[in-house]
Each structure stands twice: as structure tokens, then as C-alpha cells.
Length: 566
Image (tube, rainbow, N blue to C red; front, side):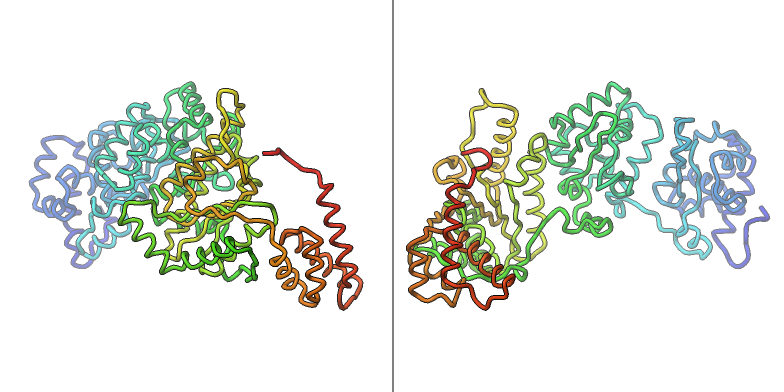
């Protein structure tokens, strides 16, 4: 015992020394242990540690062994008592209790896990820094309990089961017991979404990979090691893999994880935004910052970055534009949602802008965002649709999950913009005669319809469709704004705003002779500016503008339609 530093008035150290003198080499003999338990010093330590006498005896052994050896294993603790590691295992519950209280720190050597499935045999132990300091200072020891237990402790406790070689049933039993012992709100919510324990075990394992940074690339982690944790056999692993690949596993259907395309041997999975927030809640954003993920899942345009443009529309469209700007003013928007809620009506504001291409549908959405001080989240459905086949449900759900996250930041709710949404707003097809692509498209439409039912933000969709809009979508859009080709009067205003040097007569000539949309007029103005720069001209002549108009009209007549006609 000479290695113990007993200088000073160390009350607790003295109790440890006296107890250690009686416990050392007693071979865990029941009679000798009973006599030791009668010591006043043992009872002092027991009260100090808030532990029973068997647990206190084990603590003394660990503390003294650590003083002698540094980091220790079961063998060193057994040597203190003069017994074998096998005999020491009768104290495994007491050792686990000290670990749970964070008095003793356990470190497992996972590289040796395959050599033994017996608890603690591949672990090393030490006294926590906090406990060591308090003992040396004769200060009360801080025993961690339920009040301090959080989701990170829970995930760590589940991960400790990884190297114990439990059967799948034993693993589920232990995890269920942990869930009962620590009924955290996030775990309660998860159990409602994922009722099967084995699937929750897989989810906990993936979350542990994420929080421990055990990732392959781009937030993905290998699926097979996680399957190996929860399954008894390779066949069981394949069965679970198939449920994930076919997207019928609750972790996928509830949008908690997404799978990268790959074989059973190479498959990777990652947590969705919802999957990260399910357990980590607000802490998920801390991980976004740590991993450089902030704002990568959400492409958002701030109102300050939107260039202000003067828009010109005919009567009804112009009235609707001004009404939306007024209605989405933050004070008006909040009052509107409050009154709708009081009447048990949907509080989301949804609008569809439909009509000919180039008539200002998208630009109106951006200018509304600018005028009302709202961020806008554009989703170009026509550009991303091809990626959805095979993973459509996951991606579209993430769009809405991302939007909900953006809404949670306390700023005015952003505008979710479904740009060029023709492909998903068209009439649904008959599944009896449909292809797998048809089924996927219908699945996308159903998800959007379901999300719109409970939507509480601001959604604007733009489409060139006029007669093929699905009736279910028509019902769910609160505002339906038609964009006509601009009238002669509006075209004059557009020409004059784009080219202020045009005379009134020339602007009238262009408006009467060319049935252009605002987008087509923009093309001509850009050509004129390009020519002025390349040829060092002060101003484009009216004759050249007419030439550009003729060229634009010719191109429109002979432009080949690309893609499917709806």
C-alpha cells in the first residue's frame, strides 16, 4: 500500500487505505468480506459513494489498483483480491453500477472483441478525473443519475452492447430495458414512429456512427457493420438489407435514413435531416456546424440578394400580385394564420402561378419574397425529377423536412418555391397500366398532396400547365393565379422599362408587331447589350432591335420541343 499518497488530512483516502488493507488478498471469501463490511471506514465510503458495501469494496479495489498500475483490466482487479478474473465476474453488476455513475471509466478494445464475448474481458478501467479530484480534496463526489442522463449517454450505453456478442433477441431485450429506464422524450417519439425494437437498434447504431464521426464520405456510413450489430446471421442481415433497399423498412418510410445505391456488400446509409433531429433535436445543428453541413441541405436565397425589378402585368394578375405582397406582410400573415387556426382551418398559404412560359411567374415569386423580407427556397422539380426514380419518396420528404427546419429558426417563414412543377402537378395516371416510373411519379404526387394537407408555411408553385392540372392539386392551392401573354399596353411598359431610350412610337411598333412574353423581350434586350459592348456602340439602333425581334420570332417558330408533351 506504499504507493498511496496519504499526506495531509485526507479523510476519504484514510478510509480507502484502511478498507484496502482488509480487502486485499481476501479472495472474496464470504466470511472475510462480512467482517470487512463491519468496518466504520467501509461504511464511511459507502455513504460517500452512495453505494452498497459490495460496490464500495469493488471501488476500493479499482482505486488502489489504478494507483499501483495506472490503467487496469479485470486481471489487475482480481489480483488485488487474490482471486481469478472468473471469480471476480460475480461482481459484474457492481462494476457496471460504478461505470453508470461515471465514477469508474471503462474503455473497450473493439479490436479484441472477437476473442471474447464475456462482459468486461476486453475492457480497461480507470477512476474518472472528477472523482479523483474530489477524493483527494475530500469533497463530495458527484454521482451521476437520471437527472443528468441524456441522449448521448443512451447512445453510448447502446453502443456498449456492440462487443458483448448478444443474440438479436438479447440485444432487443437490453435496449428495451434501457428505453424503459431512460424514458427520454425523443425516444418516446421514436418508438411511436418505429415500433419494432430491432429497427430502433439499427437506428441507434447509425446515430452513434454519426455522432462519433464514423463516416465514409458525405455523411454516409457503411450499412453492413450496423446490420452485423443487430442480426444473428448473414441471412438475417440480407433480409433487413432488402427491406431498406426496397424502402419498406420503417426507418426509410418514416424518412429517418436514406440508402445510397449499392449492393449488399457496398451499401451505405445516412441520416436524413429528420433522422438527425429525431434524437439530437436542437443539438443536430451543432453537428451541422462541426461537419460543415450548415445550409448544405437547404439552398436558400435571402431577400437582400434578390435584385428588385419592376414587374408589369395585366389587371387581374397585377391585382393578385399586390394582394399577395400585402397578405404576406409579416403582421398580416401572422394575423391571418391566427384567425384560420381559431376556425380550425388549414393555416398554410399556398399559391399556384400558371400560364405561358416567360410571363413572369418565377420572377413574381422572387419579388414577393423581396417585398415581404422573406427567404425563398427554390426547388426546381423539372431539373431533379430524373433523380427521383428509385428514391423519390425520400427526396421529396426531405424537401419538406428541410423547409420545416428553415421555419424553426424564428425568422419570418420562408417561401418554398416549386419551380417548373409541370411534371408533378399533372393529372395522375392509371396505375393498372402504368410503368414503374408512373408508380414513382404517383408516389411523389401523393406525398406532396399529404404534405400540403398539413402545411403551415408559404408554398408557391409555377407551371406552364393550363388544362392538365390534377384536380386534387387544384383544391389544395388557396390562390390560383393565371399569367396571360402581356397585352399591348403592358408590352409597351416592358419595352420602355428595359430600353428607356426607345421612343413611344417605336415601343408601340414593337408591342404591336411582336407577340412576345416578358422573357422573350429580355432575350432581345440582352442581345442588344451584348452587341453594344462587343462593337463599342453607344446605343443599339431601332433597325437592329427589329432584326433581333425577327430572329427571336423565327427561333420560336422553329424551336424543337424537347421532352414529353403533357
